[in-house]
Length: 136
Image (tube, rainbow, N blue to C red; front, top):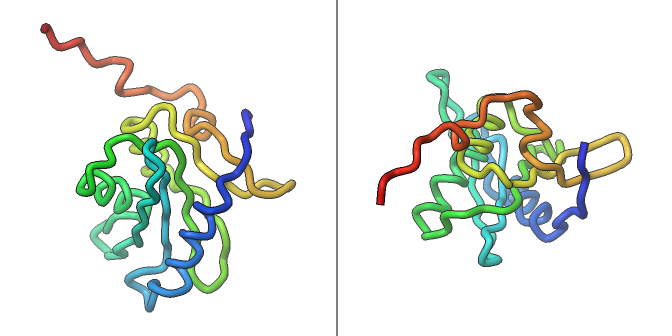
């Protein structure tokens, strides 16, 4: 697994949103992503029994709405001081499809590490690699 330096400011941004904005069972996770232009985009999950979006997917939508169409790093933090939580399988696939070069901050036995999203889904189908080029 490739590991890189952790964007501590990003982790703190997600932790602050988790501490101050997550209330009750509807919003239990916060995420923060750094866009390639340096901006930090945050969001919280919208839990619902029908499969409401995870915090990471809310951030993807919020980033697009703010004109940040390329993300370089993302992290999710749980409320009630649960710390960094790795993305679920659905989010791993969606993040990989949207941003094949994305790094995800995860907790490891030796501390927080930023790892390529592709490392979280080894031997996977990468949607972007199988799209036909649009004729110009």
